[in-house]
Length: 592
Ligand code: ADP
Ligand code: MG
Image (cartoon, rainbow, N blue to C red; front, side, top):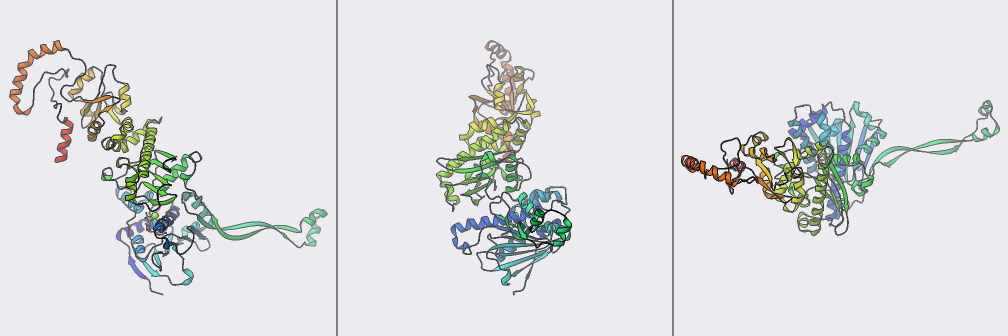
């Protein structure tokens, strides 16, 4: 047979392998979760590709995953009938790191101070390489239906290289897919107990939608006739009846067989009333490699014009990375068509950008299996789906805001408030849904944010508008002289301390028919005009104003008598049609 070729790992892989092999990580059993999830991905890929390339299925074998544990020798084999890997794919996939989960892990490792990475391994999963948490040696034998050759990848813990050779031994040939053989470390051989494997599969893989079989010892009882030993019968000293019974005996017949170990019905096909919160949380964490429970979930079915099922989630933490909000490259929505996984690349078609933080699965009965982005973009069905999904997402967020535990929504707002404000700018159609979800500090609530509803409830009977002041912090907002007269009259003022606040609100224009009014703008009318007095003051100070204007020249547009201050002698305001001071600050920052 052809000789094995030697390859060096990419530097990052070596580093990762080093970490894994020497880690003191205690929850090593996650290796099985990772390897099963790869097997499941491989089956998903094949099923998807075979829709347009049916010849990929020329070898008629079932789509399944089989796990065999050999406890005498400490060996576990995991076999799938998925897409397999070509020789080049072996090099690309198992010698470099381009993968999502593993890349996430390395990034988190970089950000964290804990240089060992021990407690990060379980949180992010280290993908294929987690096999080395428990193995001295890993052999991957794989055959892609794209090539007719089977290749064997072999790697050892503590080695900087791996080998690839072609498999020619007829005994080892597989029809399609991948077989992983793990030679367990001495201390980890306990994982090769069939019952332990079965337990782990049950625990970690209840959401894999392909059957997982484990190789189990089984037994059935049967009655066998036994020759009676006359001597024994006598010493027993029992009556005749008992002696007769002794002629048959129950024995347990033992044999080995594959046993279906997981439930394969996807959770979203079950009725929402039969699924509990823990199951949703587990499903979420496993599907999206998250380690925190979601803040909220929503499981629903729509019927009628367009039929689909979906489970949506609000994550507990914001995605990392700065440009996520502007240019989200998320893989947050997994699209299925009639239970076949299609892609997690269509987020932008199913949700507007500002809701890109929502995660979930969507399973449609109305789309063709060979959907493409173009098709999705033009599809009327998708337009309807999108509308419903957005509505459900808002219901879910509203649910968090109504939670008795105010902290839940505070957490949400801290993570995703910016997204909703972007929604004010980008999605006019949903202003009514977004506005009640907004939160701001105010002159009467400097430590806890309030909603617009709370503001409106707290309005004075004759107050017409919603007042706001934009500033760069709560402290500078509350020290601005513009506030003086409003505070004196006990009028509440919202503090816009996030640069995007003002733009978002300008798009909203009003809330419950109340306009948003910037208290720093000229001609602020807070309904307390006293014309007599104004006339008097104007006469008294008119010349002073002219004099000041003369002194300042072009630096100001105008100098006016105003009734908006109570203790400060003067204030600089922006013109009615000009930018607010805050906007000016923003624009300056942009052009610098
Ligand atoms: P991830 O699953 O996040 O992509 P992994 O490290 O788990 O990262 O796997 C790396 C890659 O190796 C996968 O993306 C896939 O291309 C390939 N791979 C791993 N296991 C299998 C398998 N059983 N069948 C086919 N390809 C596999
Ligand atoms: Mg993986």
